[in-house]
Image (tube, rainbow, N blue to C red):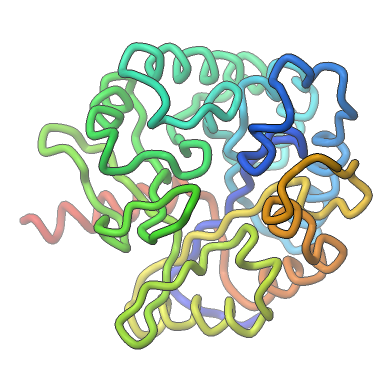
Length: 290
């Protein structure tokens, strides 16, 4: 294994194939119970992959999933991984108001903690949906005692993005220790490039991700934040025939090669849980402020 410091944050956004943003307009939430449930089998494959590599990660989990798969949630915790919140049912933050967001946080956190027996201190907004429209979201997170969020993609994208946000960890509130840890971007010719995982990782050659993480680690001396979804290692998942062509291309491209690319990535870099990384970033912020 190549040893690169600092340790990077490895994370899984736990949602099933029918809960993704790309299909939100063609698959009704009311139909979820009737669809093929594949999240547990896929998460078990991920747990095996992580165990083989000897790494611990953070599973940002929907409360909807935790409520229905409590045994899976217990297995994740028992194997040393962190459980954090991904909201209740993948509703985007910028489509909520302060009150409904607070209720969503509380409901999802309770479901995950009840299933795992472990405290939840981290949060990732579905589709990185904390942005310039939701300044109140950090206040709600702090009021509920979360220690960190990883909910910002500091890029421009047709589904999400907060281009003006800092690229690396920052404290969004003067009065709270809450830390925001954006998903990783690299820079080239003055432009920010999405480099933190998901569809970008599946579609682009592996060499791009390796170059980007090395840039962040070696040139900038900061940890990279990487994420993926359980359905991304599942080429046998059902196909959504009536989805828009762009959504199909984003969702289904290179599913059959994802597991192998993940194993290579995990072996090429040092990885750890997001809560440990958040504590490191909070201490760093205090040192800089002193």
